[in-house]
Structure formats: C-alpha cells, structure tokens
Length: 251
Image 1 (spheres, one colour):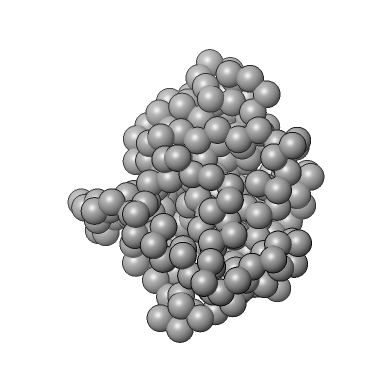
Image 2 (cartoon, helix red, strand yellow):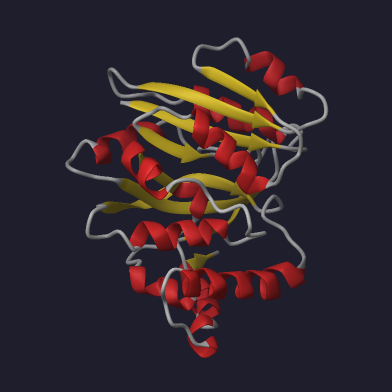
C-alpha cells in the first residue's frame, strides 16, 4: 500500500518540524510506502522543509496563501496513493505505528475509509494532552445534528477521493463537514471503519478561531451543507451538536 499524506502549512513555525518527524518515524508494514505532499504557503521556506526536502517520497508544492481548502485540494491533485490522509502543519501522529495500524485495518477487507479519535495537545517540545475527541459509537445520523468525526483522523481510499472530488472552496469553515456528509451519504457504496484510539494529536491552539466564527459562521455553514446535500434540518436539532460534543470530549 502507498500512503499519500498531505500537509498544508502556513506560519506553523517549530511545530512543523514535529509534524514532519512524526511522519518519517512511522514503522510501516512490509511493502508499504509513504508519499508526503507538503503544500507550503509561507512567504519564505521554513527551515524544517529545507531539512526534509531531499527525503525520498517528499513532494513540496509552493503556493501563495490561498485558503485552507484550496491548499488541501492542491495536495489532493498531486496525491496518487492508495490511502490518502491530511496532517496539518501543527498536528502530528502520536505514536510510530499509526500508519501500520491504519494499513492493517484497510487490509482486513473491502474498506474505503477509516477514522479515529484525536487528542488535543498544547506545547511543542514537551506536550500535554488537554482532552480527547472520542467518537466511539458514532452514527451517521449525527450529521443532521451538526456533529461529524474529527477531520484530521480520516483516512480515505483513492476510490473515495476520485468519487467525492475536491473540497468545496466556497465554505470558510465547514467544507470538511460537507465532505463528511458526502462520504457518509454514500454508505451504500463506501465501507467505513472506526479505530477506537487516537490517530492524531491536534494542536489545541491551531484550531482556534473567533467566537463568532465557531458559533455563528460554523452553524450557518453546517446548516447550508446539510440543505445543499438534500437534508431537511431544523435549528433545534442542529444545536444538539453542542451536547454531543460535550459527551464526546473527554478531559
């Protein structure tokens, strides 16, 4: 199996080195390989990229700042692996057997996507886990409540990538939520498996946005994504996501 890991980076500083190291320390199953596609929108090349640019399998795409989802789409265009995943420039794989764990799950049968939990961490050299976003027992019907699995812990097959196409760039925040709607709406043809462990450590400060964006823009865009994908949605049901988030986030 060939992995395509897409890392988009802009202003990640020293955390980018941690991200890259977590990819290159992975102990793979025999015959597996990694293609690491780094979409770099920094005005100058970060030192971490200079150190890793000559490694086998590394592809560095230099782009002007173009937005998160546009950068992800640039990476998807270049990805030709059997399994595709995103690992943002401030996040990292918490152990060295994550890719082997995912590959083993894909090899158990006709699996199209795998997803897991994420740890929220703070710090760079010494990190502290603040909590875990746990989606054990997740049901696709939770999407109508505005609740999706953690996007950074999603691994998809090339068939999923080719079928669903790119992320929508006309969303400011919720294009990943729209992607999950399209993914789970194809349950008749896509088989997904949840791995009940943390597959990614996500920088707690890297996910910060304004309160208005989290509460207003995010809610409006999730409602729009559901409606545009054919779901009838009510405001009370959509607001249930806060209860689900509270239940699924473990400190």
